[in-house]
Amino acid sequence: MENTQETKRFEVGKEYSCRSVCDHDCIWTFKVVSRTEKTVTLENALTRKTCKSRPNVWDGQEVCFPLGYYSMCPIIRA
Image (cartoon, rainbow, N blue to C red; front, side, top):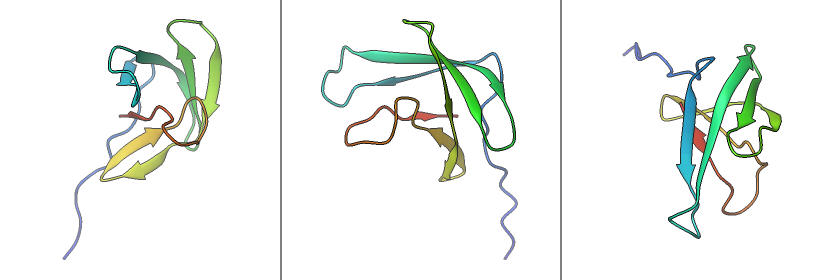
């Protein structure tokens, strides 16, 4: 059986948010500034700093670790 479901991808200009695992009131928001096939450039809405991340695919969605990969790190999904 063939899987015809397409992967949901990050789009330039859109904002994505996630909550902290430790503090429900802490919300990170990132805007996609640019992207290539293998890299997404994100801008932190609070600090205006940019970072690059390589998206992975989980359950048909791209996911990024904008602040690095560590325990309880923020994860944004497309």
